[in-house]
Image (tube, rainbow, N blue to C red):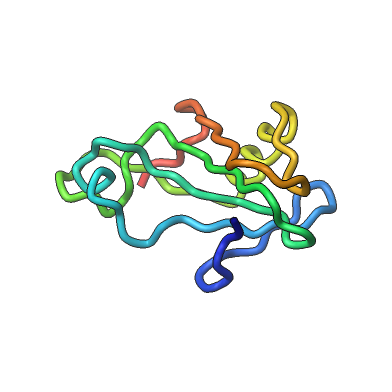
Length: 109
């Protein structure tokens, strides 16, 4: 599975180019605060496996005014490095690799 190019952003981490994206509108569960804010990343060269990163906060567009956070490029770079260190291999086919970040990675909105 690959990431749609529309709406994705480019980032270079340790000399490798990646694309990442945050869902613009929350899912139903994100809107009600039942599931966290997530973003996905993949390598641009030969994308095969996605990195799905769960943040410890609600989506900024949640419907119940829960505290949310922002996904900054430095957060994405940190998540990519952590995912690689924990075994994510973006160039080999396989299921999405899920990574959960701690509260220290959140920038308040």
